Image 1 (tube, one colour):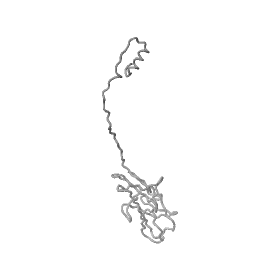
Image 2 (cartoon, one colour):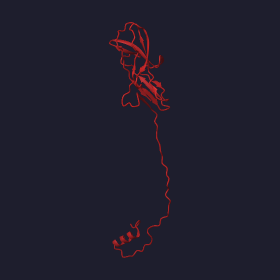
Image 3 (cartoon, helix red, strand yellow):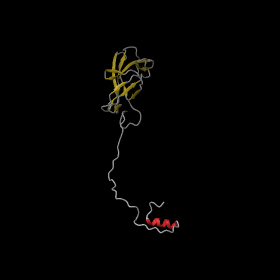
Image 4 (cartoon, helix red, strand yellow):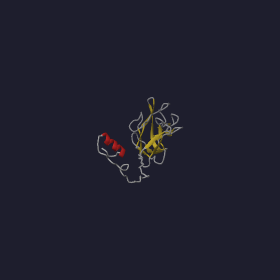
Length: 187
């Protein structure tokens, strides 16, 4: 009970307890060796970089991603042939970027008017077939619901979607044919 007190505190404590003994103390407390306190220390710094990707239309984007429009243009109804197009977006096209070594897969559904594996644009009760590819004028076909690898490890990469519409040359009424697709990125 008396440990850690200096001599004055100890004498006062003994007097308060009513002890008749006289205690003679010398010095000013326990003797301590002079120990040098270290002035340097180490601490750990760490961070974990997770593998992943981002898909963005522009760096200031706050919601949703604008993929633009796959526009095959305007053509005479009696002109048969294939019409090629690329996703166009004037201000900020959709881009994907991944950490080195990450693999991103792009999957696009069949749209609102597909029959089997054939995507179709619709106007009223008429349909204009089209397909998607990963290269302009051809390349790997992006089949409905089937994932396609996208290499985005070298930096921001434009989303590689191109299209080819096949006009029959007769039988299609004049009008604005459209479809809406959903794209999913996974990594």
